[in-house]
Image (cartoon, rainbow, N blue to C red; front, side):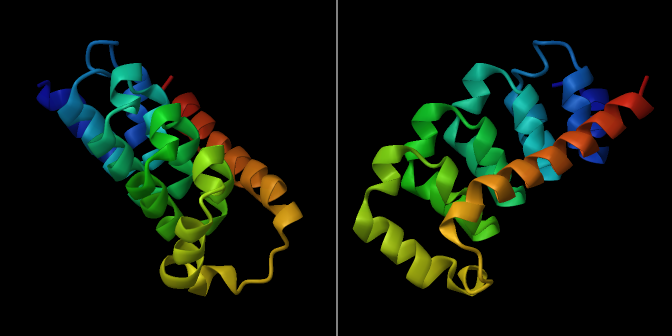
Length: 149
């Protein structure tokens, strides 16, 4: 493990984007990056985007990181639950099979994210809300990357 790389991603997870490919495949470095900035998962290797522990850390920090989780893990109940605890609107990013699992989704909405749901959004507004929040995260990423050049 590279101590300098670890320190960089600890300061800002988006620093993962500036690291060599082999460091983006280092689990310790990527875990630290996503614990700092969940959306830094975008820059992790495909292998680590498909790693359950890495995905859980990313979505716990920022539920929208589910956007960058490997497709197979978007159907993982624990990963989706962790993401929704952080931001309930990400249910729309879960796999179709999981979204159609009525007992699971009812449990989530009744027991895990009920306080968030009472905010008054209509289901048709969710895709626009996700797009808006993803745009904001993209702006943060670009601002960081521009400042490092």
